[in-house]
Amino acid sequence: DAEITQSPRHKITETGRQVTLACHQTWNHNNMFWYRQDLGHGLRLIHYSYGVQDTNKGEVSDGYSVSRSNTEDLPLTLESAASSQTSVYFCASSVGLAGGQETQYFGPGTRLLVL
Amino acid sequence: AQKITQTQPGMFVQEKEAVTLDCTYDTSDPSYGLFWYKQPSSGEMIFLIYQGSYDQQNATEGRYSLNFQKARKSANLVISASQLGDSAMYFCAIRGSGGSNYKLTFGKGTLLTVNP
Image 1 (cartoon, rainbow over the protein chains, first blue to last red):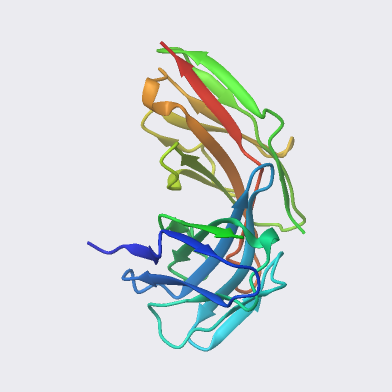
Image 2: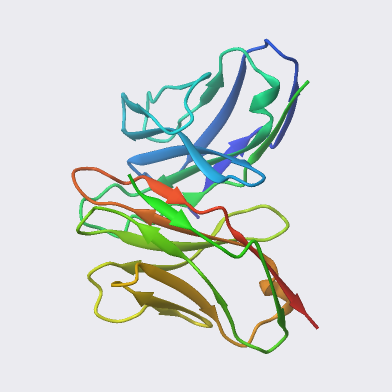
């Protein structure tokens, strides 16, 4: 069955370290998204991609970067981790056909703690 | 810019009763889509139901229905015959139109507790 996976599921790191969170989908979806979830804020969009080599900034992109070298993967990199980036991170994907419903399907999430 | 407002931080309902979770939205797009997701305590985000702005009928999916009132810009989720397993956080989200606007804007969520 097609799915979307994230790794690691839990990560503890130190302030200033570079961290990369992986997202892999086998839906063959064009669109991929990264969100962070914090208490009282719901889900906020960090970065998104509408296809290979395409990346775009979302609402809370400072301190994060992504790259899309193939359809299946959109890794999220925290350049220099800060305590404010302690959060739960969700990856999502959608088909990417104009005029469609474009339901986003989510990965299981990664809990990141920055000490 | 799009905005979702969920005014109920928490809701309680008795098992087997119906419950309505409120969602109002703001958008300038002529065409848009509205989504509801469920997040149980295990943490995953589960898609529940979708309503397109030009859909003639309110969406239904099993025990879930969407009370869509376009003029009021509201898209309330109705859960009929609540079950203990419905206890979760519920998020309303909106997707705009135009070009390749596939992004979702989420509300802050409503925590539903179903009491036995």
